[in-house]
Length: 124
Length: 138
Image (tube, rainbow over all chains, first blue to last red; front, side, top):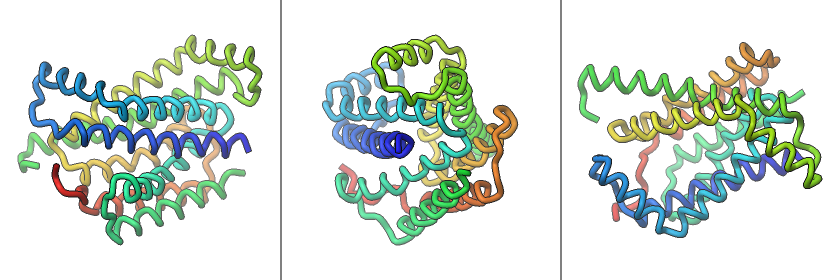
């Protein structure tokens, strides 16, 4: 049960964090200038977006959940299972970022889910 | 992505870097957490003890350094290569983590898990072959 809770945080908070950061980056705008001063200005602009901090907080929660999960399970089990974030990310992107996901991408997500199920079944 | 041998070489080197350092980071985090012990006890005192051990663990900091190196390489390669090219190419990291887990941590990886990992790689490959942008440019 504890493992499932940590898995929920790794996938849920990790994907939620990435979606928040992605949303924040879209608000900041595309990067065209890669000179150090311009990148520093870009980082400064990103740091003033609230969604960025929500994203970073969620990603921190996901990181500590990953550490907790790694203290209980093998890394060859935990890391492949986190590929479920492709499914969570795709669902989140359609719901919150209004991205149009093609059939091919849904097929890829389905294949990832089948792979994760196989890894889960290999547990013991 | 402009087509030149130098750019291809640079891309391959960085993708190899990504596919090695992300799994290595996770393996080192795993090694660090295994020496600290299982995080099943949620008593505040025990939790504080675990947190202080995490912060004092060399393996954890090495793991974080590897993950940072991976992240920088990932961001760098995305400045010239397509996301739809980098993402499937770096999916091999799922196989590398199992290989490193087997070699460095002595984990037992059964046939079903290998098969599952291959299926995940195929799935990521399919996802990566879709168009990376589905919304209008702002």
